[in-house]
Image (cartoon, rainbow, N blue to C red):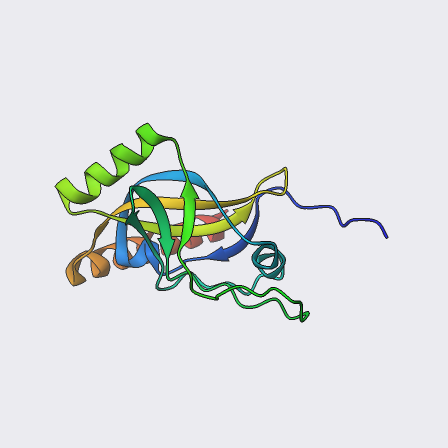
Length: 157
């Protein structure tokens, strides 16, 4: 049986609320250590990053509370759905991120889990600062204005 071809940059899970709740200042790409059944479950595209966050545990960077459902085909080995998953980043990059989190009150928010062109699962992390309610309203107002402006320009020809 031929292996299906992978689409480069195929998104397995996306945190759509993150860009609404936070101002994303910087994004980085990190590898993630997954079990075999987790990878198979991610390929089906039913994972959820809504309440997920990244942080430090035992001197390493981990992804917490990300929901990857159990693989439907029953096997002898199944994984925990919300276990902490180790993120693979360079030591210097990790120190920079964790320094910003502790000193400046920022947070590491997973924006998406995707497969790169080699079929390896990666996590896109955003170094973010929380938005206040009035900031969210202003961002939504600006987004609506840009959409209306584009619509008017498109209709005029």
